[in-house]
Amino acid sequence: MHRSRLSRDIISNLPDELLCHILSFLPTKFAVGTSILSKRWRYLWASVPILDFDDELWLNPSTLVELEERITMFQNFVDGVLHHSEVSCIKKFRLGYRDNNLDSVYSWICIALERRVQELDLHLLIDWGVELPPMFFICKTLVVVKLSCALFLDIPTTVWLPSLKALHLKSVEYSDDDSIQNLLSGCPVLEELVIEREERDNQWVVNVSNPSLKILRIFFFTDGFGHPYEQEDQDYKVVVDAPNLEYLSITDYLSKDYFVKDLPSLVKAFIDVEQDSEEFEESPHNGGISYHGPIYELLGRISNVKCLSLTGVTLDSLSGTIGDYKLPTFHNMTRLEFLFIGGFNWDFLPNFLHSSPNLEALIIETGYTNELIPEGWLMPLQVPACLVLHLKEIEIRRIVGEDYELEAVEYLLKNAEVLQQMTIDCHESSMDQEFCGIEIDPENIKAIVDWTVPTNIHEVANKAFEEIKSKMVNSPILRLPNFEKVFEVAYGASHMGIGVVLSQEGHLVAFFSEKLNEAKKKYSTYDLEFYVVVQAIRH
Image 1 (cartoon, one colour):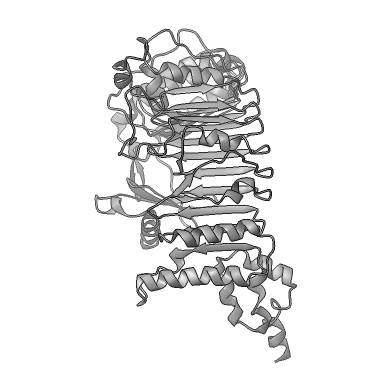
Image 2 (image 1 turned 30 degrees about the vertical axis):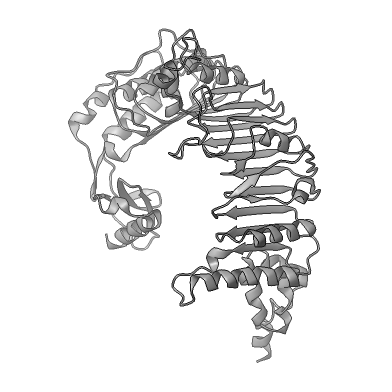
């Protein structure tokens, strides 16, 4: 009896500081719920420095309580917790709220600021924009701020956030074009900025100027409604002046110009931008030049980057350029990624290889589908210097087996003289998988079988060449199962099909795959993962 009671009380005997730390990982509703465990736990929640309120935990439609009553219960709960909390310095205050009671929201934010909150995370899904209290803009303790939806930023004359290091602005509405820059001007140690925009945010020009900024992410998609004050002579623009920036990510399908000052510290960049040449060519302000030019200019401004990722959408925009534009030379770049690319995007590969003399790693992932399929790949007239001197790693993901893909693979293997590793991941649609193994149509692999071994490649490249041919044309040999040893099951699921592999000690035992019908393609991610597990057990 004594031993049982001792083991049962071992957690309760921990110090208050440790118990409060454990409770800080729970939503505040559940942390307060531990007060019923015993007298020891009754008031512990009041010392937890992290407050996480989310009305979604209260708005459970399965309960018999009316919606308005549940909202009132949530508001009373937040009021009660803030009233009884003994924390004088809140580490994190998170609020997820969907009701239109603006007075309550304003009051809760003020209380958090008065208690020297360090991280403020607001996610408001309400009908009207909430204005932040004036004390927010001069809070000396804020380190992380995340503002999402239904917030209206009217920046005062004085902004001073001396401790703020991370700022996230998602679907926020601004008072004018200068709002973001006026806010940034009062953040002397800001290191990370994330801006997720909507068309109706009152920002024609996003101006990001901050000398301490190291990470910048910009997302800008169309919402289908357009700007309420849209004018023919107005274009969306992005301006960046951050000399210490190390990471830049731009996903932007609406802006027409990118004015980026030199970024001498840039290490990694992700560019996913789309521009419609027909729309721009009809504008009276283009001067006869397609607006793909700004994308080339953007690449020129980040030409000292070490790792560059470009999407198929970006490459499509580059392909329609009118005028004398060419790629800059990426002297520092050692890693290049083409992501979600389609057929004609491969034609840009030689240009980038020539422009990247010190490239060491090349990653190509197919998946972006454009309407036309090229008959072949445009082979470079001269072998790029990086293939001869530096390229050590090549990875091609989700290859289908089109002629232009195979021609590019053959060229890379033939000319990459210092290549150490080449990895090819085949797309599911390129093979007909059966339970007993993989059955490949001989007509589909004839071109691969007929590949001749290049005469001018070194031993490592030659070995890789033959191994790739073997992997692509030969079905795997299945081993009989040994029921005395451990089985390993690996599975994968997409909205095209599912696949399961059974193996022992790295040797294949059995396969199973299934092409999904239209009904199953509509499964959610969770249902799809569950379905493939069920099918794996059945087979």
